[in-house]
Length: 248
Image 1 (cartoon, rainbow, N blue to C red):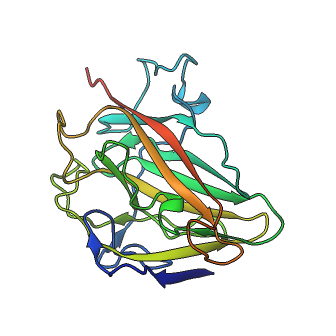
Image 2: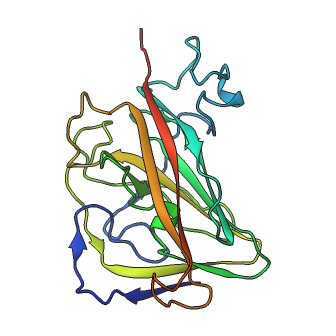
């Protein structure tokens, strides 16, 4: 069960994110089947399934999905915060192709036998979270689910160019505060896609390369929403590396 409450400050919209309800994709978007380019990975060199050589680099003799231009890898993840939950991320699709951006799976485990209430319900699963430089943003590709893996769909967004996965304009987000309840020993799961923000600067080419840092805040509201100053909270994040695929 998810709960929402209006912020005390005046309602409004901010420049990037989606007009999101508690359980669905952003309002005003349509869904279409999500086309992947490959399997996920958890480490910097592509993981054992992707043929990494263990030194943080990707082998040059790899076979990539048709049309793949970039590959992402999880470079590092923070240790679990000192809260009753453990976030983790993995790549459901590590490739940028004409049919799909990079897709991240986000899991937040409840480490206790009792229900835990956390907030804010969007950024705890990296919905609309930008990287530290404001170049990238994660956009929902599924609902949030505590009852198994949710169905994935590619949102119909206004992109700058076909296959470029850069937003053509900002997307409004409602100013509200929501929480989500994770059952005892349960897991909150969602999928998000990686997009270049519409106002990103200093980009060379269609899709930037390098390492991006993503970080969010988890607040434990199990005892009720008492304000950020009184509810235990902690930051957690991860680093994502992105490399261009040599088509030569």
